[in-house]
Image (cartoon, rainbow, N blue to C red; front, side):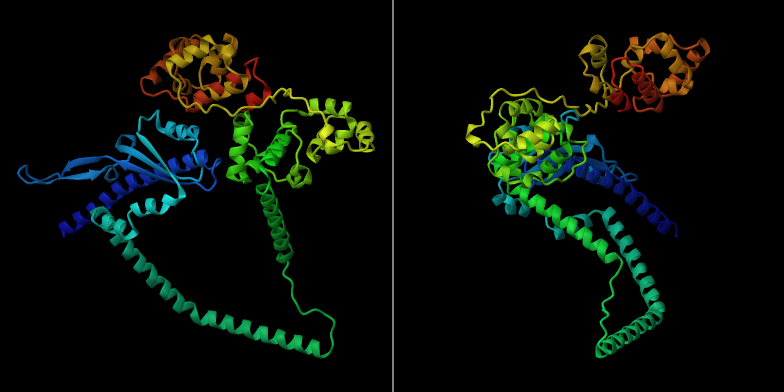
Length: 499
């Protein structure tokens, strides 16, 4: 009896320990593959990405056996708690039609694990080599027997089989119990249907003009949603069929007219060849895409206008300069795209006058080569998670070099230390000693800016908590100090403070 109890305890202990490692392994591999897809997919939507994380093997000796017994064997990192130290290498296989494949994309992928010092190998192949690549992967049967050879998985499969058998028995009993009642309901439905058919036949025989067809209240809503989906599909098809020059024209039109939601939709639904053309011909594309990450895409029909079949070369001219250009050449107003016309900063009187002017020959439209000044775009925050001592010293000595829109994304007590003593004391007075201790992370001058604003008793209490806690930039206390300090920075705009 004792052996059986020990066997059951061993079963649950080993299985739970291994399952924990496997779950962390799968979560890491899935997250890494999704991150790589977000880098590659915008440039090649048809690209296939396969990620394999290889773990180290560890030699282990079974406890409780004598030294003269050969009880040592190899375990993978999945048998225990999976972590960064158990990773041996990461293999990434990319199947892409791009030829050549952009080196910048490969560098961004390889840089994902540079800080973690994990070897990441990327292999790019053509679609013709896809089958050969897939054949190298172990089959489902091979994976099953490989898993079966591990006692952990064997125990898990046996327990799962027992659970499945119990579920089947319960479901069978439930179906037997409810079968008579279900049969009765089915018979009532059949009888009701026959009655409706009989009445319909009688109405037809009497020449009734009433319609027999019953319409569900949900059908109009479903029809409307279906039409909306079909309309969006038509927009997408029309977008993907645009020539390269046309996609550049409509995309830059959206940029200069500040139709960022429409631009985000076009980028998400354009073909990979169109994206590559934009990246090649439009130097500021990467900067503009950085501002579209937090923009909700919105579809529009501007790209379906015939003007984009032979677009004007206005990719480098903003709306303000374009309005001045049309004032000197009013006959060219009708040559503009509807999007450019709608967003042109001119009066209604000018629009009416230009509409009555005869359209000029597009070859006579004189377009200057001088480019307009680029838009002032709001950049995406840096997303910094850790700051070194050198970083904080650099920030402290070069505050004026930090762009205003990036201040809120740099978690540091520098912003707190720049405040007047009165403002710092007011912030700390609303915090407990425990929260202040949790926020005490940074260089000595920054920590001194906190200590000098604390009363003697509260300062001693904070010092006491520091011996028992580990300060963190993610702690509620640090986040509170950061938020309050940013609201008092004189050079930060209101929208940056809200961020």
